[in-house]
Image 1 (cartoon, helix red, strand yellow):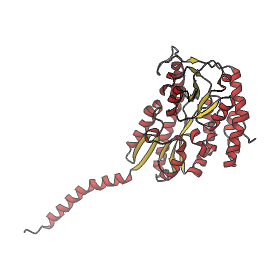
Image 2 (image 1 turned 60 degrees about the horizontal axis):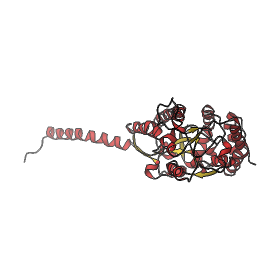
Image 3 (image 1 turned 45 degrees about the horizontal axis):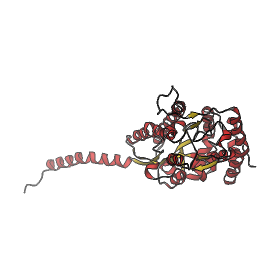
Image 4 (image 1 turned 90 degrees about the horizontal axis):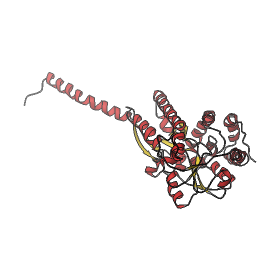
Length: 357
C-alpha cells in the first residue's frame, strides 16, 4: 500500500474542511434560531387573523434568528381566560390576549378598557397610551411577561333578538358579555349577563341561551351573528382592547439588537390593528343593517336601533355609580396602588375618577 504523501494528506484535510464548513455554518444558524410558540387570536376573527396576525408571524418566521409556530388559540383548545397563566408558565412564548376576559387574574388590567368609560376610539387610544407603562410594569411583575402590543377590536355593540328601541328595552334580556365591568353595566340596564367565548355565541343566540351578544360590528358579521339576530344596537359598551404579550424569559433571551427589531415589528402590528378598528366597523354596521353603502362585509337586513340621548346618559350614570366603584374596590384589594395609577392616567384622559364605595 502506498503511503500518503504530505501533499496528499494536506489536500484531504483541505477537502474535509471545505465539506465541513457549510455544515458548521448550518449548525450555527440552527442553534441561533429561537422558537416562538404563538397562540394567536380566535380564528373566527378572520380580518384580524388572516389579513394581519398570521402574515405578521409568517414574516417573523422568515427571519434567520426566529422559527415561529403559530396557531389561533381556539384551534389548539386554549381558553382566552387562561392567557395570563399560560404566558407566565411559559406554555407559549407569545399570546394574543383578550384583556377583559383574562382580567379575572388581575383586575388592574381591565382598567385599560372598562365598560362605559371612553367615549370613542380616539379617546380609547389616548387611554391606552396613558395606561401603557403602568400596565407593562404590572405585567412583568406579576406574570413574567412583556407587553408587545395594545389595540382594540372596535366599539362593542349589541346584536339582539326582539323589539328594542333603546336601553330600557334591554331589561330582562340575556346578554352575552365577556368582561367583569361589562357584566356590571349590563346588570345596571336590568339585563342578565351571560359569559361566553366568541365561538360559543352563534349557537347561544340561535337557541335562545342568549337574547343579545356583544362584540364589534365586523366581528359579529364575520361570525354570522346577523343570521340569528334581528336588531343591531349601536351603543358602544367598550372597545375590547387586546394585546400581544411575550414571556419575559423569552424576551430576555434576545440581545439588544434583536429586542429593538422585535419592538419595531410589533409596533407596526399594533398600528395595523388600530387601522382595522378605525376602518372596518362603519362598513360592517352598514352591511349588518342593509344600507346601500355596504361594501366589504356580507349584506344582512337587521333593524338599526336609533339610540337616543337618554340611553347614552343612562350608560354614563351606570358607569359612574356601579362600574367604577365595583372595579375600584376589587382592584385596590388586589393591588393597593390600582386606583391611584388609574386616576392619574385613564382618569385624566376621560375626566372620570375611580374610588371604592
